[in-house]
Length: 260
Ligand SMILES: [Zn+2]
Image (cartoon, rainbow, N blue to C red):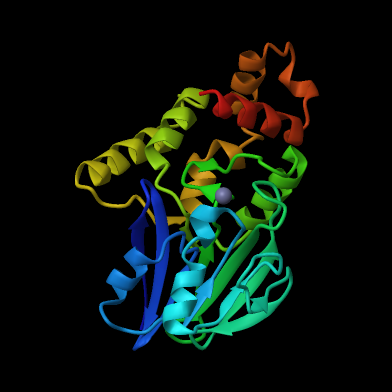
């Protein structure tokens, strides 16, 4: 039975810990000590990396030194032993892990898509999306263009609606306040804000999310919604949202959020 749990790191990072039986993997270990503590004496079997930022990679060297485990991720990252490329599939915890290129936040960013066989012939999909898709938000554009990020998010939002989404930061409340400002008429956002506020008040993570929940509440996946189009254009001082294409609207939303 696969279990996936967050290991908090730094101020708001989550290192996702995958365990099946006595096999353990982690995704994006920005630091080693919280991982070593979470393993409670068990050994680490492997590390997965989504992109090169230090808060996702800083724990690689000390963890490899301690556990001599393989590191799967973008080829350009120091310490990666198995380079991953978009379109590839590797086996992790006995399950297929699909790899998808999702440039935007960084150019090397990968989505890691684990397909867990469950009862009968059905599959539960688990998406490790690093800093590309957040609960009710998306990552900043440090290296890529709005067009790249828009298409990367479109790939993720096309995954099965039941896909569980494991983001790498606890940014949900802040993102929901922005979503609520952009689309105040969306009651799903208000409901999610209340439930996530209760979770944070209890010091619980608001993750994982699901693709269905993101499609309902994430403004960056909802650029076609007329209320969002109007809000984004009005905020940018653009006279006519109907003349803007979706990438342009996405760029306006991202720009707005950068200064929110
Ligand atoms: Zn990052």
